Length: 106
Image: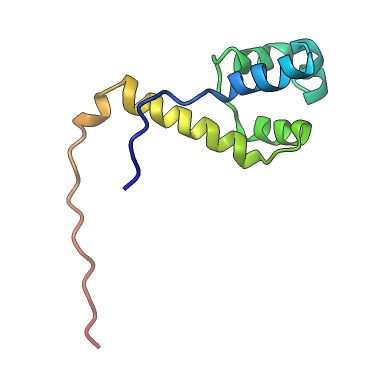
């Protein structure tokens, strides 16, 4: 059984900002133009106000020679951790009884 992650995962926008933009000395305006998106769209992601969509994952993968799955998995892990740890409404859901399938003894 995997151990539960206690630390909040890094948002993919932080990775873009810290590991790519700062390292490569690229501005939001320049990277947005390279990606073919608005400055506002990129800014929302790198400032962690928006998540990485499949379209953006494809753009990031092409720009940084990575896979789109890398960006989507990072976003999924972040979103799931936030949902599980920053809200508790989901804990109020009652399990639904699902009967076992009938076995055919032919």
